[in-house]
Length: 132
Image (cartoon, rainbow, N blue to C red; front, side, top):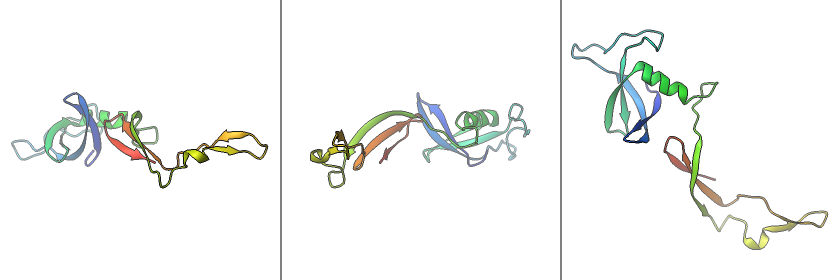
């Protein structure tokens, strides 16, 4: 679980955090008792959000969060929530005057391309990025 990336809802919005280390109790020992089964593992871990806020989470909550965000092969999965914006690079995009092309059979067709366009994708975890 150490160094795993989690997405946990904080203050009503999904927030990305990283498991940093085992939480240490007042006796200077790791908090909780480790067990191979996440259902009975009582270890506590420190999760850091945005490089500032550090919160303790139990091993079973951390494992559950990781499992719900992974596909059958163990890869992280994000689903697109919406397209938040778009922009066009006029130096690369096909100009409007060249959108219609004529096929070999003589039919006029619209050119199917996204060349020169970028979409700002908002992902289900609340993060966003520009996708070409």
